[in-house]
Length: 110
Image (cartoon, rainbow, N blue to C red):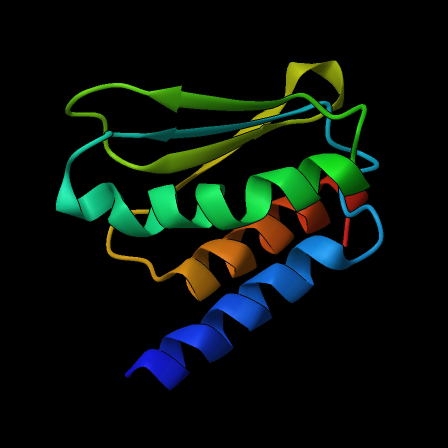
């Protein structure tokens, strides 16, 4: 079990080390509850990846919003105020990483 968790953490971190994914993003917001079990993977994802995401994308505002009872979700804002959101409840850290990559691709038109 621990080995599986370590492998997943390394895969998640590899996503953060990639070249800037967020050239077309104007803002990234991650919302979650500080205590709910549904938000646990999102909290863990933020704890493990925020620093590297910010290092690779220093000019991108990455906003972390914690509020009791909030469902975990991620929002991306693009040019002209266009926004796209993804609900993160019941997703693993790897699935959250994949969701982040999908939001980045929306901004590139891919």
